[in-house]
Every structure is written in structure tokens, then in C-alpha cells.
Amino acid sequence: MESLPILKEAAERRERIRQERLEVARAKMREKEEVENKRKKNLERLRNKVRVEVERDPTRTVKNTAAWSERILATKLDRDPINYIQTYTNSQVKHANIVNQNNLDSAHERPAFPFQHDDARR
Image (cartoon, rainbow, N blue to C red; front, side, top):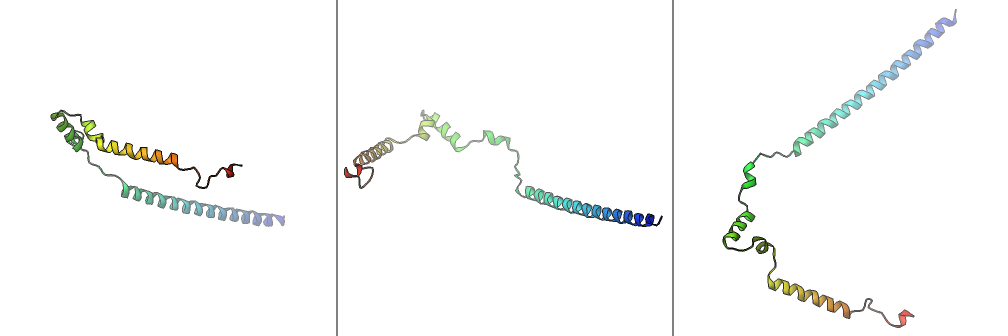
């Protein structure tokens, strides 16, 4: 019967240790939740800072833009607005052809390597 109080003390000590571990685990969980909540608040604050605020403007889709004005002007003057806007002049095309031809001609005259000799091939 004398071992009964010793067993009782051991059981109480184990229960106390278990409760302490539970308290530590709960404290860690609370701390983790606080960190997570703080992170969420910071993210929401950042989202609010960078959120795009746009007003609806349905008339914007039918407003006169520079391209639209050019198209109207081109139709009044009987010319093709696409070619008028997106083409090169004849002198620009001739210049580009001359430059390209010169580059091709000079590339054929130069050897691939500056010190290329017949002796190097042997």
C-alpha cells in the first residue's frame, strides 16, 4: 500500500508535464496564428495600396482618337489609311536596298578568318 502514494505522485507529475506541454503547444499555435493574421493584414494593406481604381467610361470606346481622325481624313481624301500610316517612302526603301546590297557584297570579299591561309588547312 505504500507504493500507492508514489504511483499517485508519478501520475500527477506525468499529468502536470503533459499539461505544460499542451500549454506550450497552445502558446505556439496562438503565436503562429498572430503571425499569420499580421501577414494577412499586411498583404491586404498592400493590395489596397496598389489596387487599380478605374471609373467606368463607356463612351471611351466610341471617342474620336488620333487613328480614327486619320481614318476619317483619309476617307475624305480618297486614300487608303492603312498604307498611308504604315508604309515607307520610295527613298527609304531604295536606301535600305542599297545598304543591304553593300553589306552582302562586302561580306563575300572578306575571309571568314583574318589569318586564313592555304598552309593552315594542311
